[in-house]
Amino acid sequence: MKLVVAIIIALFIYFFQRNLYIRLWNKNLDVNIVFHNVYLNQKERSYITETINNAKFLPLSVLHVKFVAPKSFIFDDLDNAFIADSYYRNDAFSVMGNQKVIRRLYFTAQKRGYYTIEGLSITAKDFFMTKSFAMNIHNKSDTYVFPNKIQDINFDFICSVMLGDIESRRSLIEDPYTFRGIRDYDSGFNMKHINWKASARTGDLKVNLYNTSTVQRIKIILNLDTNTMIKTGYIDEVSIELASSAAYYFLNHNLPVALRSNGMDLITKNLCEADFGTSSNHMITIDKYLARIDGPAGLDAIMNIINEETEDKTHNVSYMIISSYCKEDILNKIDLLAKKSEGLTMIVPYYNIHGFQKSRAYMQGWEVNIYET
Image 1: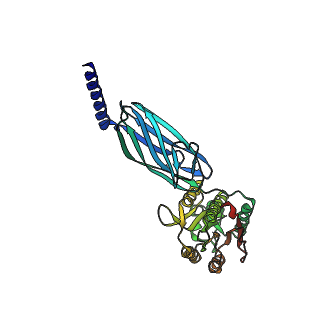
Image 2 (image 1 turned 60 degrees about the vertical axis):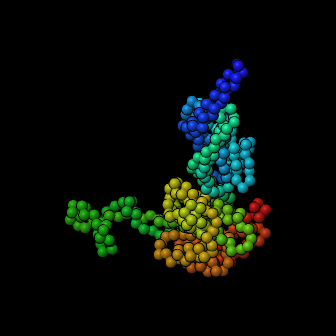
Image 3 (image 1 turned 90 degrees about the horizontal axis):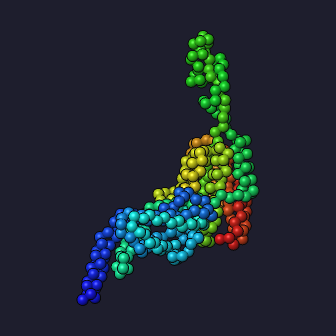
């Protein structure tokens, strides 16, 4: 009789907790995964934070959190992970009632790009481990891995020569914010410079004088289409690094920098383009665009960009063109742009086994070791 009563009690407890878990296992359960850094540089170390908040009395003695991370992230802890086309993670937790658990997963970002963790799935079991529960959770966390900045004396030399050319060809204009003084008016002055208060006080027309200042700007044009059958993924990455490094160099010298490319934006599906800017935040803007490049739009796109720049009537713009493709069709177009611009430099990344032939004075070769691909 006691055995029967014990069995009945055990069955009651079993079905009671089973029904309890069916109704309440995911109630007040919050699970999220976020990147610690919004922006990273290549080879930089960071971490992902897993947070589980079980805000109810019912414990979850076995809870699994599954998500997919980029394959290019090298995690310190490879336990509970499977690496194929991506990094698949399955972490186990034991969360008591009204408990919050936080875990950090450290990694090193190996490759430029824009990365997201957009969803995760969780599974749990009841108290007796006999029934499983599962749920998908929407999770949106993203991070940018910015292109590597090239630290090379040869690259610094190319940029410094271009900077020197810009300084020697600068255009001088009046800066209305740098007041220099007042003098008598004559016919050579613009009427808008008349100082009416000083004129009324002296009885003669007086004009304001201003110092001159330089308006000089850099536009980087990045071509990622080599028009060859050779695998060019690595040389494209070097080209992107050159563009990022050039922007960084010129912004550090207080020059407004803009960017145009035939690289396709992963998010907008448009061509990569950033207008002129000078602030430190502008470097972030450029790097974000470069991080999101997901392959080239084609050779026609870069030809159109060069044509548009040649036809643009804007003055005081010098160009840095980065293109591993350097055949006569594109060089003929660049020749026209060079005549129109304040100055132009073209960097041509090339594999060391192919060599480089300089056919224009504005061309500079940039050797890339094919064995590093």
